[in-house]
Length: 158
Image 1 (cartoon, rainbow, N blue to C red):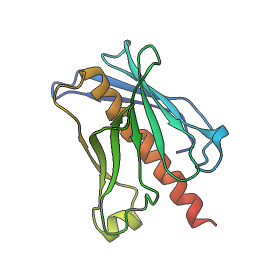
Image 2 (cartoon, rainbow, N blue to C red):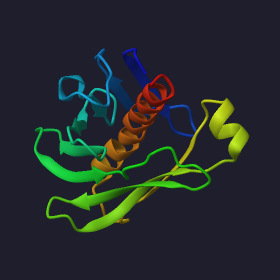
Image 3 (cartoon, rainbow, N blue to C red):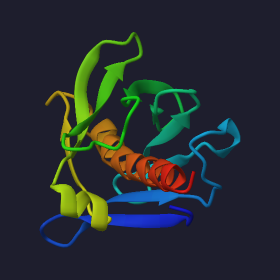
Image 4 (cartoon, helix red, strand yellow):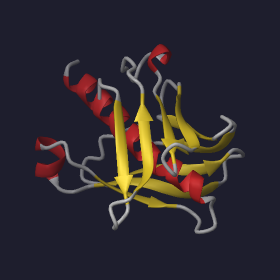
């Protein structure tokens, strides 16, 4: 979680269809000066949008932005993101707070969740949502993983 990264997502034919870029930023789930952001390109080289972490003292919040950096959707997570013995759902909402879907981190058992850094995610959004925004929501999963791992690491070291 403390490194910059570029993730290239390919289709079944091996063609790159989505590129996710996250610049190097300090990480903290407690201070607003360390908020995360990433850029999603789909197709690679064409900006589809951005995912921006928003500061909130209690909830993980993110904004989905289009290629012009205009807010399109919100993602709001639960107060407790550890997901002990249950799935963790992050609601995908319109700007006026209407829920239209969710990103879920699935509970995969005690051993996997505690002793490994693997995670299984699912995304549920309307079928008619703009395909570029769907690509950005896929990118949001990676930012949520970073947020959860940084806060979990901070919790363990308190």
